Amino acid sequence: MKFSKKTHYMKTIDDFNFEGKKALIRVDFNVPLDGDFNVTDTSRIDAAKPSILKVLEDGGSAILMSHMGRPKGKVNPAMSLSHITETVSNIIGVQVKFVEDCVGTKAEEAVAGLQSGEVLLLENLRFHAAEEAGDEAFAEQLSKHGDVYVNDAFGTAHRAHASTTIVAKFFPENKCFGYLLAKEIKAIDKVMETGEKPVTAILGGAKVSSKITIIENILDKVDNLIIGGGMTYTFVKAKGGKVGDSICEDDKMELALEILKQAEAKDVKVYLPVDVLAADDFDNGANTRFVDVDKIPDGWQGLDAGPKTLEIFKQVILASKTILWNGPVGVFEMENFAKGTIAVGNYIDEATQSGAFSLVGGGDSVAAVKQFGFEEKVSYVSTGGGAMLESLEGKTLPGIAAILS
Image 1 (cartoon, helix red, strand yellow):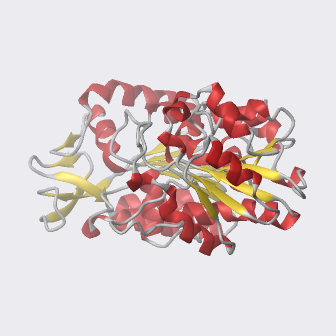
Image 2: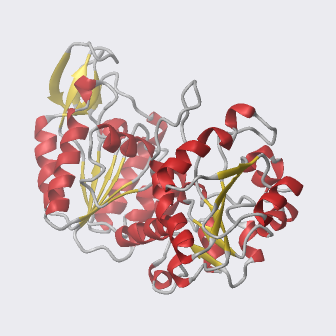
């Protein structure tokens, strides 16, 4: 996804004065709830706060629309956004109003009665099947709620849904990116297009198959490619190594060799683990030992990076000026196999303190960063799992294209 030429003139929320105007803001409030409907992670609400406050401080009002869960076009009380209204109010510092639909008479009346400085949260968009279908008539109904459309939901920017993409066409001149979405675009652009060299990508996770298109797309952008996690073993086995019972995609071995060949042709240095922490069972309490990555005995499986590997990774990361981290280098969910992922986080922290730009994205790496307290130690943590991955694959995200068009 090439942004660099566009990021200089893309319209953001700062290009508008919202005095006396209603801002229709697509936020991503698809937040986790516990059994008592309490929000257990507020980071997505926190991330939307600056855009909402900008509208209010200008003297405008904000109409917030979001989805939650997958109700499949039916009303599901467990997925009602009414459960989060109090939390949103507390975070924004304004008592948020709620209306139990997002279109129709109730919603229209609630919007009409909104005063400057007030915030209204519409009910779950996905209670209507028309949302995910990208229905134009539904999008037009939503568009009547606002004078300006603000998309601040990177997590859904890869979906061509009514509220993320189609609605934008009803605001030909009055549409823009919110602060969060603008930051996401610029962060990815910094890695993929304008990053200071050397650029290093650290790709982890279980499967090569889920990262193929990312690898192929970034080989033209990076100087170093560090491969860790479960997909290591497909590469190692393809090169003739013994991986024991480690996770391995036998049908992707030829592809792994082809990736290595492409990297060599493009002068990209690829770093695979040289040693791993192997275990005799996929269990935190299993017997463990460090072994060479290509000499894992039968009955054993590699579950984390070894000390020699981490030393190599450290040197590469500390010499980097731009870093992308997508995927853990071990089974970090188990304490005994989290040391490699924590070490990589520490190296990225150190490089960032020395002036490197570091972007973390993709569900598992974001989870690891949060779990081990690296959120404030890297330059940027992406809020969008699928959207982030599709950006790295070079795809144009419909939610972003709709604002740029």
